[in-house]
Image (cartoon, rainbow, N blue to C red; front, side, top):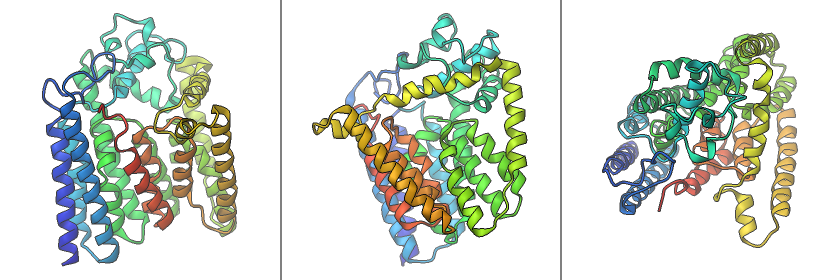
Length: 405
């Protein structure tokens, strides 16, 4: 009876995700950003979307409880995971213009011969991508690593001048990355069916990746790939995957010291050469294409990190009356203390990088709902109960963020 109830919960999750997709299509829905990235239209569609996503998350949670306590067939769980992760491909670009920003950065180099680390979308106001870029990014150079920028150029060429094609390509790539992440989490976890549902049935991730096309899925597919390659003894390839992940977004740099301490404690050999060669090749290619300007990505990235989003915990503390500096300092110190504790755990032979990712999300002043992908698959892969509770709690907390209600 238990597996049947878990299957029913998964079907309810899928149905609720499908409802979210359906309510995103009416012409007056607020879920499809306008050319300035602002929601316009009838707010009632956003409320229906929020109710649908909340129902999906509730069904997801119920399914996890049932699967944790009972055995289930991996194949049946995987079929639902694929369906849930791919269903938002049928939606328009949801709740964010980031995919169009990637498109514009790619076009700066591919179509205009420019440099996205030196020039901004506003430098090419007549480009067909410019009017679709979110207003906050129009005067900002690229904050992404050189591996992503090099990949964005052929994607820009493939999309041409079509905003719909650009959105669909990035949505499709993110959906494929999520399926890879799910499969890799299953490969790494001792509880295969549960790990498959923990990642693959997650509606927040489905709606923001197959729905929103964010590149964080690329980064995490490489991180999970690095862990799987290391587990199978292919340490040089694992090092290469780590380097590529870091060169898409810098977040995996926080995980590497914990893995290094774990490797030292357990005697596991690591692929320094694979990491170094990959970093060198990408660095040389980026320097040939963009000069040394790609190193300047950390400037706008740091400025972006200093901005606060409304759901970030530092912002919440400020709302309770704490000064800005105090809220940031308290959470930064708490994260440093937690990282020291996690380092001791890694020194003892257990690198809990899923928990590290979740705690980072609690401390960061710039928090977006799709950042949950940093924590969810790692918590599943490591079968870390505390990290899993934290990851699911963060998904529930972040669910309303970006929904224009």
